[in-house]
Image (cartoon, rainbow, N blue to C red):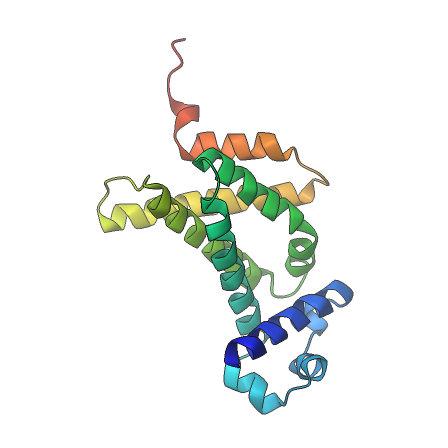
Length: 180
């Protein structure tokens, strides 16, 4: 039952977000929408931010296996970009809140986790010591998250071009000499 309660609360949060500013969503709203007690809410979550973090982790857990079914890492990046572009309306609403810093942190952690797991699963993890691997992941996660946030400002970015550019950037192809 706990997973069902958590899922119900996270889904209720997402539904409320479609109609209400994130800063206006309260625990009371969530418990009423789910038909649970405040005690039940606090048994599963610390606060609203905890709900957002749990939902983001669940989305990444759902997303990764789906993307690993792609025929190639390039195609997987395309699916990731599609997911990010489709999430733009929600991301814009979240970033317009007083919790922007928290939202950015959650987004960054999600992208980092996605990149780390993708690299591991596709077997492209470079032979780096743990400290270098960590900073590499942090650097790429900040870059990808920044590019995705910037794309949120455009109404409809060219998904294919963005996915291709990110793939080439992450693979180092943009910096290789082309014989010029």
